[in-house]
Image (cartoon, rainbow, N blue to C red; front, side):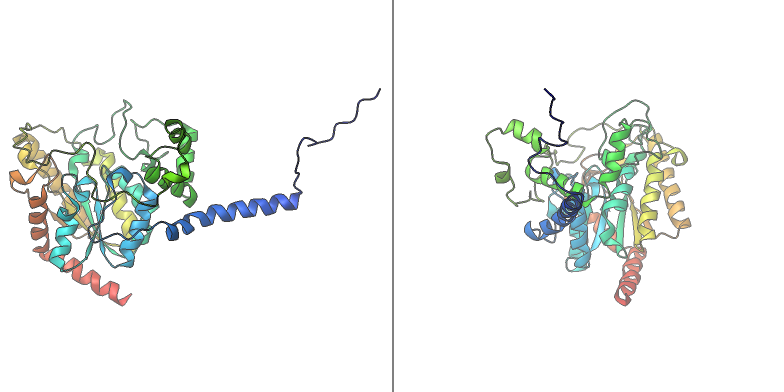
Length: 374
């Protein structure tokens, strides 16, 4: 008996023609493109005057991009930087952006700081996720803490986990301590240019505890995933975890230290900071750089002398690039919580000093006139 000739795809209940495949692909692509945009209409997001990225969403770059857009729409001046700008030891109404806005008589400044964002990651954040603030005035903070050792500078050969690896260069320049497979690096590069990928990361971060849906369902086997999507974003007032000890460093009896400062010519973080400045200026941003104030009281005499020279080097480079800037003098010793973070009264004092600076006032006035013309 002759066996029947096998029929291709006979087990498939439904088979699509080439045209049907093209239609299905077009519909899927349209959904992928539309979903992030539709979500902005569904998920409430009305940031108040002292809004900052919630601590638990520090790696939610899609929400950061959305916050940039809102700040630009409202004509607010972005204050960009790491946890010093974000306000690691203070509430939202005690940050530098808050005090600057209070002295400006309104909602003039927006806290676009991100906790733990070192320069190598900051340059990527601005490049890939902050396009909405193009053409605006920007106050950019420079924290020399990231050049205070080979480890902070990401120059060590030994692998270690550092903040925001998805934002750093994946192929060039090489980061010696960063280990990631080639396929993983390629996936990260692709993710930066796909709104859908950023939106999915946002949903996982905001509603599934920064876990993928499969991992979340393992921990919640009887929970309904859609029920977790409450559309209630975490509060910007949530404190860091664990909650930091918001006392002066002197009360915590933190010792002075001798920081092994990295030479700027060799510093990966300094090259990255210069790239951050270049990204902003290429987009037509008017940039003012605030350097410090680092807690110089915490340094040994030898280390403080090296720090002061590094600060002058940064100032010379900024002057050579015609970037208006201020090299912040140290605050009173009890205004610091640790090596680089001020307490609430420290931010108030820093805002007073900055607003009293003629260079800063000229920067704000001249930039405001140009923006008005545009």
